[in-house]
Length: 428
Image (cartoon, rainbow, N blue to C red; front, side, top):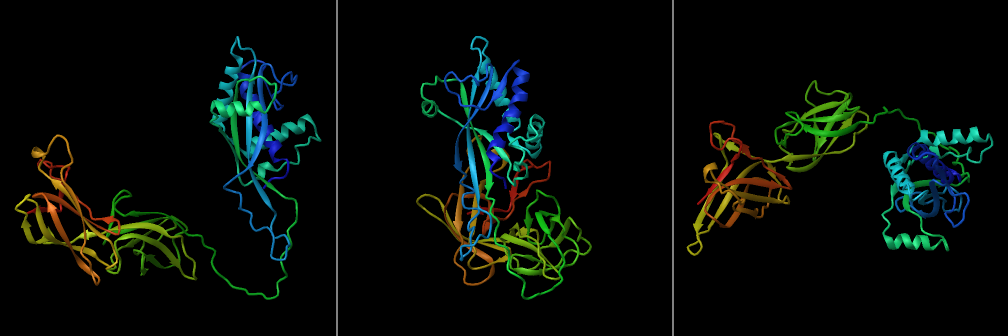
């Protein structure tokens, strides 16, 4: 946090940043920090003037320090106020040689290139102040140690807002200007919080210091590949290897790493437990002694099972409506892993046609159907399909938001090479 000199330090650092830029672009230009009123002899000519005109509470940090006092009224932590600073930058000089416009261009470019006041920039400002005066008022500033860096962004003033701002400065003619917002400055009180109560009981224990972090979960076959039941996944992160007790994936809490794969940055685990369920699952590594990693998301896709190379998809009660020719049927799909009764399951159908028969435009027919109600865990899900135009459709099943995958034709001699071709369903 910063002391009471933080606001002045922000202004001084901005002045030093702009002085280096405008002096190179416009010879003799100066940067000042004064009020832009009429006949002010301190205004530069040519140059840029920085006018700090308003400070407002920062909305994101407004309640970050609550509560600051205990139930007895004693101080438990130093109060901190977060402020956003509003600046008006005015540009002065000869209009004939367009000095104000040149100075604006130089200023905007400089702030856009370096919008954040780094600790080095702040310290350079304090060093320059010390060279100017060993007792300079800014030297006690501790803004460079603030946990937040101050960032400048331009304010999109329209003509009405800009005129209202200038109307505050009575009898002052308008000068080419631009507004900037500096956020966020944290000001901390100098009060000393009440010290902690004395220790009356000592409890000593030993536990390993571990901060295991899972940064990503990927398929072992490739970072971009989908993850389905039966696949092996790679957990990537930091401090992962060593002393692993078990790995939790969703409701399954006792999975073990693939032997020989536990390293500091990666761990592999096979998703073969039949208790796993499709959908978005949380993955967490648990260690001997009770330490745990963070929980990372994994989307486990269901698979449509196959028998003899054919997908286990069947149709029953097929009927054609004599009025409009549409098809009604019951479509049953066998999935792995099993599906819980409360999981949402949907059937997605997209019309499939051979390459030579495909229209030049238009996506074709597409349908979506909800699964029939289920009373128990099952691997077979039935769908009541109604009002479907006769034809062949690519079939996908979505379980808790995770979809089954489509197969791509890999035979280069096939006219459908590179297209999705299975699993497919023909109606009627």
